Image (tube, rainbow, N blue to C red):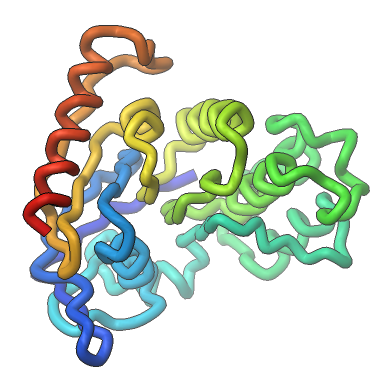
Amino acid sequence: MNSLDIRVGGLSHRFDDTHALQNINLHIQPGEFVSLIGVSGCGKSTLMRLIAGLQPPSQGEVWLDGQPPRVARAAKQIGWMAQQAALLPWRTVLENVQLAQKINPQQNAEVLPQPDALLKMVGLTEFATAYPLTLSGGMQQRAALVRTLATGAAVWLMDEPFAALDELTRELLAGELLQLWQQFRPTVLWITHNLHEAIRLSDRVVVLTPRPGTIAGEIAVPLPRPRNDTSAQFQDLLRQARSLLRQERVHG
């Protein structure tokens, strides 16, 4: 699975009278895992939609491997995962995954993991013939993650996909996600409100200011994985992120 370079330059965006983003400059290396945090309404999801090419920015540029997002979208190189699994309820888990490959054909389709193998990776083999509404929320998100994997997308844009889950399920799925990312190495942009999760998963944490969102700062996370969240280094990074977020909340 390939990964793409993401570059955002001088990006600003408005919705009518709402100034959502202002002068965003961001570079995400191929295969890097970057988390985006900030208070609600600061423009995190808007930035992700602009990177995905779902709408053009009011000002500035977005490049994926030096090309506009529409090129990556046409090549089925962008995978999207949100809070809701959005599985088709009239198709089984396996059929949902198979459909993702059918409607997102890749030139290197022969090297993509088979749906059965993907389901096995996340422990869903025995639920392959089950329908989504019979599954727990965590299982549905596992299936949604497999669907993203099945497309072979080089970029994963993930908008709080585990936010609605209980804490234990969320931690388990985050661990599984990390293992899959390490195996396939796509470029990941992850939106979260959970600082602990951001530091546990990411190579880098980017903090946005309140609206209009701009980059307040970045925190590199040089710790080896899997990360010990009780270590002094982890706790220090957590304090840095919390301090930066609090400063921006106060200033906002």
